[in-house]
Image 1 (cartoon, rainbow, N blue to C red):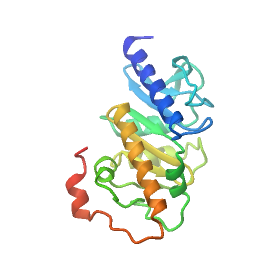
Image 2 (tube, rainbow, N blue to C red):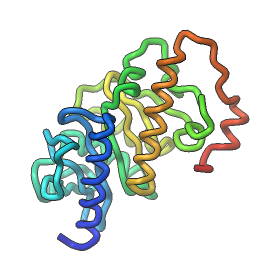
Image 3 (cartoon, helix red, strand yellow):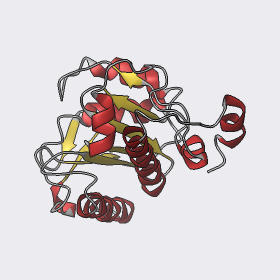
Image 4 (cartoon, rainbow, N blue to C red):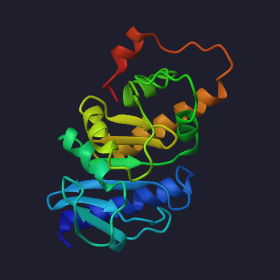
Length: 210
């Protein structure tokens, strides 16, 4: 394994362990990818992020086609679509984290912007969060929509499923994912209480400052 690919694999393993041990993913849910010079390194199908090893990772091309390694996650096409749309992004993280998944199941959400900017860091790291209509896990019908959405948004929420975020690095993608999950938690906790989110003007001055 080339040095860059080995480094990317080690980064994925560390990130996977971190997500799992902190309860941001469970069972065999969630997947992570990193773009390398040889293709996109992605977690394999059916693997637990709590036990994944470097040898469990798959390599796919920019269309999600399997190149080498174990069979990739059935959502590898989703990672490839997001990375195609965002040439400056190098990593994608997708989880079924509890509060984000809970929000994705609610009725009456604004599909163009699911969560209000309750905190400055949410406005900086996430910004506007679109809600994509339900597709079964692994449904390739989501590919075109995800790619079109990712062209203007680095984070999205899949209905009745969970968040997908892209970052310039895996560490950046993790930060975005965690900020999204924490804001989803606040949103659920405050759901029946009057709230005072940031105004559009306040949020606009913060976006891209993270």
